[in-house]
Amino acid sequence: MIRCEQLSKRYGKNVALNQLNLQIGAGELHGFVGPNGAGKTTTMKILATLTRPTSGNAYVDGISVVENPQK
Image 1 (cartoon, helix red, strand yellow):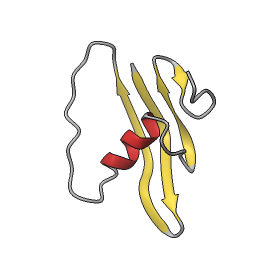
Image 2: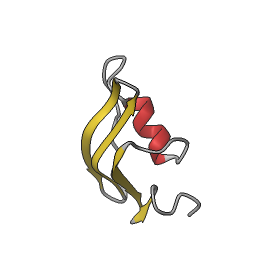
Image 3: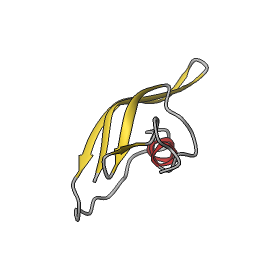
Image 4: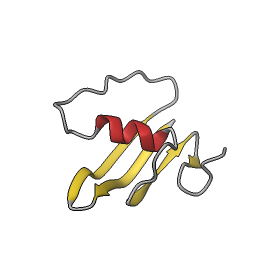
């Protein structure tokens, strides 16, 4: 399961991701599409713990990627 709550990422004055709320249940398949600059790569980098969000939180299998990135 993946859950994002008010997930945001800013690079200086540039907003890459603005308060994303998303929930994908276990076993569900979803496409992740959108125009360039929509925040797709930024979201995936946060979920993979390659970058930290500016605000909000994300959970993978109920584990916070902000509070417990090693898990």
